[in-house]
Image (cartoon, rainbow, N blue to C red; front, side, top):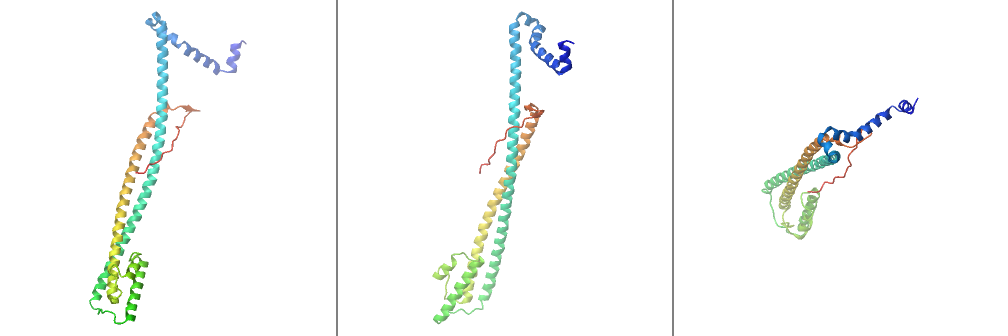
Length: 259
C-alpha cells in the first residue's frame, strides 16, 4: 500500500481539499487558455483576472459591512422604539392624573359656587349691624380668623389668607356681621377654587400635548424600526458567519434627547 492509499484511508476529506486548492490555483490559467486574446497577452489576462477577483472580494467586504451596519441600526431603532413606548406610557399616565385633578378642581369650584349662592340667599334675611361693644368686636374678629383658618385647611383659601385677614386686607373686615363675613369668605373661596381649576385645566392641556407628542414619537420610531428590520433581513445573508450562524452586530446605547 503506497502513501496515497494510506492518506485516502486515513483522511478521506484531505484529497477533496487538495483538489479544491489545485482548482483554485489553476483557475487563472484556465481562464487565460479559454480566450484566444489571452493567449496573445497572457500577462494582461492574468492581471484582469486578479483585478476581477479583487473587485469581487471588495464587493463582498462592502456587502458584509453594509449588512453589519444594517443589523446594528435595526437593533438601535428597536431599543429606541421600546424606550419611546415606555416614555409614551408615562406621559399618558401623567395626562390621566392631570385630567383627574382638573375634574376634581372643577367639582370643587362648582361646589363653592353653590355654597356662595345659598349664602347670598340667606344674607337677604340677615340683620347686619356694627359691633356696639369691644367684646362683640372681639367675638367677630375671632369668628373671622377661625373661619379663615378652617377654610385654608379645607383648601378653599390660599395659605396667605390668615395674614391678610389679620391685617384687614383683601376685603377682610372683622367689624362685619358673621353672616356678612361668611359671605365674604365664601366669595373668596369660590374665586380661589376657580383659579385652582384654571391652573389645573392649563396643566391638563399641557400634559395632553406632551402625551400626544410622545405617542407620535413612539409611532414614528415603530415605523422606522419595521423598515430597519426589513432592510436588515434583506441583507442578513451577507453577515459574517461563525460556527454556522451570522455574527450579531455590535450594540450601541441609544439616549433619547429631551425635546
